[in-house]
Amino acid sequence: MSFGILTQFIMQTSLIVVVALLFIPIIYNLAYTTNLFSGTTAETKEHRDALWKWTIVIFIGAMAGNVVWLLRALQSQQAGQVEV
Image (cartoon, rainbow, N blue to C red):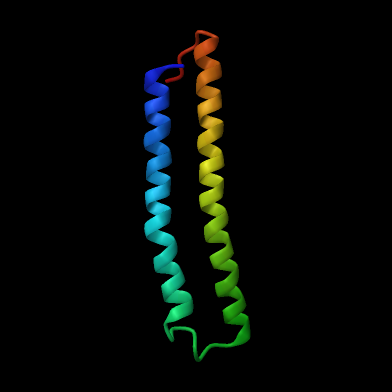
């Protein structure tokens, strides 16, 4: 395995994790622990819950995309191709 590919994978994964660790608690606190949605309808609260679920799905998708990128980079390296 190439040191450059592994280093880039680790940096990308670290960035995704750091953004998730910063972003998810902020969204959770705004949506659920404050009175921001106290006077809203049930439909608005359903939209809030759906957005919360999609926020988590987006970060899981980012991690999966990062793993796919790693596998493609390793395959192209083994084939002797260089992606630009």
